[in-house]
Length: 200
Length: 188
Figure 1 (cartoon, each protein chain N blue to C red):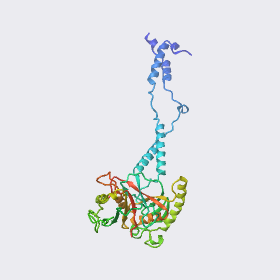
Figure 2: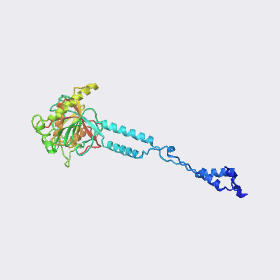
Figure 3: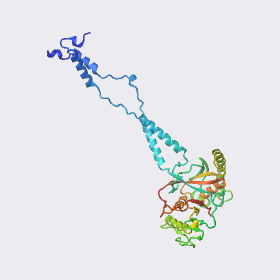
Figure 4: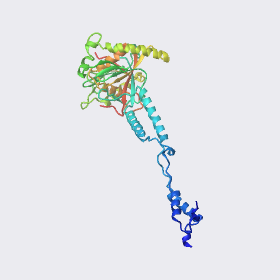
């Protein structure tokens, strides 16, 4: 085993060899490249924001999906939506208490004349008390009373959030409000979409 | 002399071998998880959620049971009160107040539609002006914030809400509050 400087008379001496080796190493050295961007911190942040938004949106009763069957009326009211109360939804086709469907609604013409129909009333077409809605509200009221007592709130009456389509006829609205009043619901929050001006 | 300083073939080969960049074996490399597709999904969901929130800015209008039934939660109004009642009919707004029915044009007591439709549409500006005029008619009405609404059975809920909005504040003087509490009446 001979050193390069000693190998032959044509071999360069050791200092020359080392110089050439250093030059070659410098020449071949690659620029430090960024193989990947470290986005872990940003990913953490975005995931936290996403989870927070989904949680707050899911828990809020103010989150109302807008579709052809249910489109809230617009209002210039800027107050924060109340989240206290049993949600009663009146869409174009059905009536719900919470997530539970109570009644299929007839067409708008029929609703405007006699409301939900005589067969759903207590005493004929001129009555404004909807029996099925009243039954559903009574069980909701029982639960709400316990919740209000546990929270230390006034349990003598309950509150309701009315989520109704903008085209709901006044007749049906009154029937729903009257039935709520008869089921010990003493305060209602009519949910609306915020707008800049009064729509004509 | 010149020849003795040039590199030999063996020296050049060794320089090539030593100066070549060494590839790291997969074990030494420290593998990175490719999270870019996941990040894409997260970003898309985030944008979707933000866009959805933007269309659901809601508010609530508080009210009490309609006057034909329910529990007695409505405020008692004195006989000297204005007792403003708006009746929404197909031709416009009929208004009733302490002095009786309001005449067309909101000029005083009289029969007819107080605020008729304008170009086939409800005239909320005129309704607002009339309510403001009626409220300022007597100092007794200054603290009265409640009004009643009733309507034809087929009237849209949106129209009811627009009437409530029109009576909330004076459109010409936004600092002047008119009627903020609404109560519904059952149509006969």
